Image (tube, rainbow, N blue to C red; front, side, top):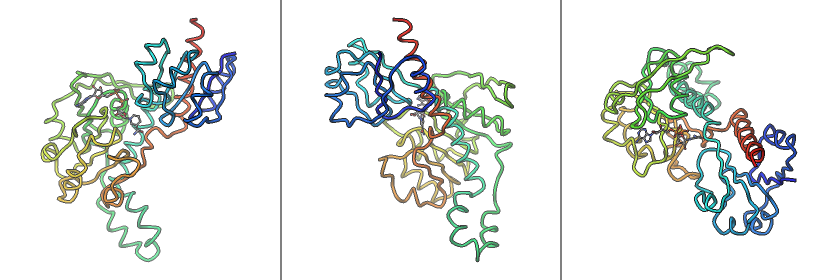
Length: 317
Ligand code: NAD
């Protein structure tokens, strides 16, 4: 029987598919230091970001056929080495796109209506300062009619565009490798409409967008630094759910301080898991601890996508 170790867990939907197809799935975590001894008895190992699959471990497992990574990045796996040994390496890049895009929209709505402040201040002052708080959150704004700038028009960027279009926003997308994209919008179950969105120049996006969201891979140098911020509209709202470091955090804090930037939504940070305290406590920043992909649906998608790939692999043997 094919033995699968899901060392960082797998959603029950994926586990059920594998077991129904006749595979044995172990979800009991084996400590990293014990994998050398115990992984050789498995045919497949599934990981998320915690378990590392390095060259020495691959060498210790001559029977290993598949390494599956639930999620996007493959930094914790020596991919080329594994492939060189004939091991298939799978990830699930599209499974969490919708989930991340919805979190981006949540940050945009939060900042537009001061929900982040209200949720911090109401529990402490709501009983005595209700009217004062109401007044302080009065300058809300709607997304409808605004322009949403998207940097990186790949899977998540396009999902975010779809949600923006449904909210009645104009989309201004930037991507050196994408000229245009067909954006599908689900209006209700089974009913979709689509729109073709052509990308524009960075300068056009920066100067016209009311909201800007980043969806690029991790970069060595920030894509948004002081120079780009100066080209933005006053009061712009920026959201980053891509990777820490794609925005220069010093420039962001300066922009917020000067009022050039109206607010920021951050799901990712430089130096995770210990982000800068001044970002976490800032009155103009809505924060989440890298939970872009943390929905039941995304985790189920990840599990079933991996299960489908494993089942297809063995079917083709
Ligand atoms: P993707 O590869 O589908 O899209 C990325 C796009 O960025 C590509 O179209 C690429 O051409 C474009 N790009 C590259 N360099 C660029 C640049 N300098 N300027 C503009 N565009 C550029 O990737 P994706 O699945 O959409 O993921 C996007 C980001 O989201 C990644 O950084 C990924 O790690 C991150 N992510 C975050 C979470 C979370 O929990 N917050 C979850 C999943 C993915």
